[in-house]
Length: 120
Image (cartoon, rainbow, N blue to C red; front, top):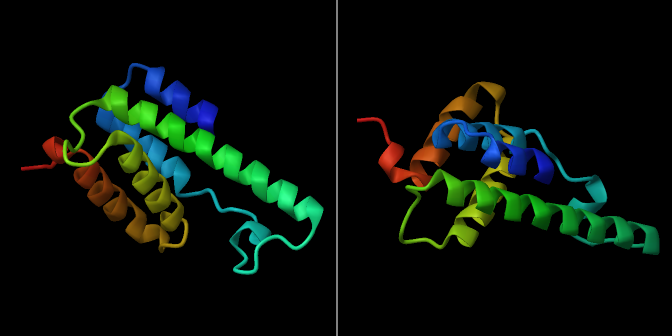
């Protein structure tokens, strides 16, 4: 996922289009069940998987931050790293939304991240 987002950032597509595609891709990623467990990993193997997932998630967040930097015109009142974290969390939350609601949620998320891109 991180490589895909990095490729989107360097792909030369319009910033809003690349950002929208990145967020749409994130909306279809769901972490493994043990990573979501409120009790945390119970065995060494599960702990290793949880650490690997956390590392991979951080790589995705960094790639998303790079994409936001390249997109420009993002919010000036929120640091890019924080926007990347918020976008990642929102993208993950989209996986739990009804499919018909996702396009509207994506548009709202992009409008939040890139206020200059809001339709008039």
